[in-house]
Image (cartoon, rainbow, N blue to C red):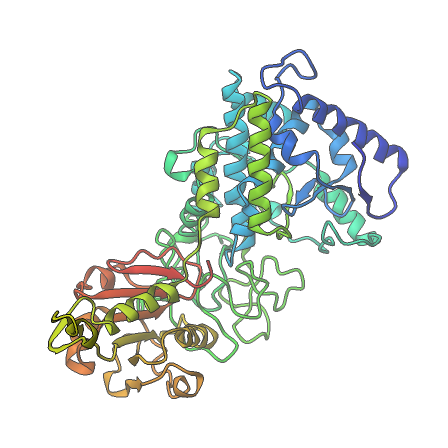
Length: 567
């Protein structure tokens, strides 16, 4: 195997040695699954070989380990040479399974660091399943040839209280381990020489991480990264002031050992809704720049649940919502995402789902021909990932057309003229204008961008339908409802958000007929941060309800269908 490209100045001898070691691993992977006579004696893996070997492999020092964008594989030669043969096989499997499960393209708008952890549990779990299929001790082999790992339940305990001791990780110092880097490294595919500071940072990261994220006994319901992400996200603290996620206050002498989850104003970690005792939502008045959705920080952040204001590295600090400096509520806290280490650097995908699905399908076919092993769940997973995607607007448009066509209701006062020529009396369908209600969440957790984005989506609906848009926070502002006869940009500008307080929407479903009349269906535009007590009090109105979620949150509706605009 030869690297197709070398980024930066790297010693030729080092490059050649890395090529030789990778070639030995690929040679073993390319044999039959049961062939235990070469290399490590584990046997081959034609599926991994078929997916990895034919594509571009790039040598670079821009990251401490390895990486993939779903299309290419990047290798740090020093990292390659440090690994045992089995360790390198684990890494090859890790990289391949990222591509197979299309993890780079499935992230959407989720927090990148937390998503990286969630997908590592999946791919490392799949690697461990391979060890089990070969009658080997998965936990022992992983720890011996790659390093110490933390199970999902252990990591959940760490997220609940990073200052409490987790069994097996008593030496973990969260304050020291989460120290922000002095400088960020360039992207793995960025072709330039590293600066002196970047080289020092690379050397620091090349040291073995405290632990990896892996679990040999993942529960069946946790076999998808989206499930793990939602579970872990629900445990994170959300700053009620600036919206930062995953920042824990350092304990002082008075509350040392109590953990972040018990400090006043931190919200409900377990439910992940940023709730606050004052109004149940953690909603605070904000200016135009703020974004208190809880899932993304505010709109000038780095997309990782933290803001860069007052901290050029975007680590360990957040801002006060207006960009003037660290937040006085969580600004001196620790960044939980700085603990542990991923096996590789995670990159955004550069491969379309269609092309990647074809590559995977071809690799599976080649594997069968070589008597290889294809995990039973892979075909089902691939089917889910490549299934046609239906947008929420498509669903509602279909509902509008059914209503306009009469929805199977016949008008016996009018008959179709053509059948009458032959003596048949065929009734025409009843047709009428479609009416629907829209509740716009104007609570403090909804940024103006979220509200504008949610309302703008209505333009994709049928322009002959009539809707009534009502704002709501801790109360429903029926008197300020706006009737829209055509969902176009000009009409939608009539909507003026009112409120910015807490969130109480149960009464909307009880009273909408009284204030806006009969509706064919209802649309709720919200970030999903609703009180559990409010959801429990909501009564099904008996018509279709569509929840349009503007933030990446684990929202479960009491009825109706949920559509995530970011996923």
